Length: 167
Image 1 (spheres, one colour):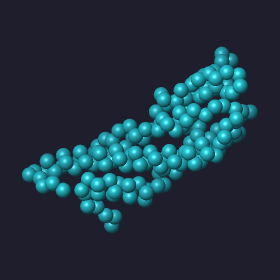
Image 2: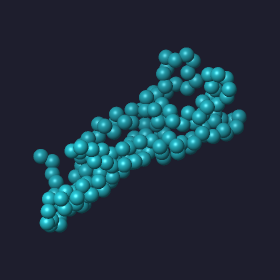
Image 3: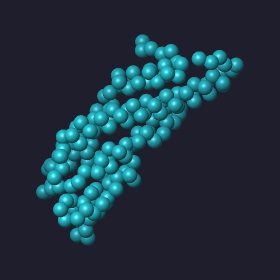
Image 4: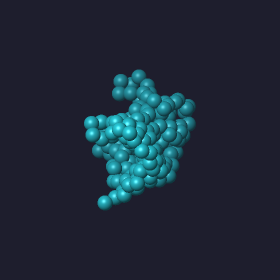
């Protein structure tokens, strides 16, 4: 740990390193969510109606770490711009597109809804759902991993020279 000549120098050092550490913690949380999605969605559902792209799981991103008031925030999201809608032909459903529009004008890109649908599932009480499934609650699962995330934080802080412990 370096020595400091002023409080401002110390605070700058702390803030810079905490941002780096939290970016690393965000990557660890991203992996927790990624692994959970693989286990609960991709390994549990074998599609026969469409060709799997893995666009949704590969769209998971740590966007930014920012200082907010007396704390920090890590933005973790699905970048739905990387979930691509594709027409594939007559043998399979199109990828990330609805089967029809309500107005009857053809398929519609539904990429932005994919993470939400996998999180929450579809509504089995709706009129004639084509494909019923239960959501996997990946964000709820991640929020319950506090002890794992805390260990990640302590490990990354230690790697930067901070001596921390849980009391």
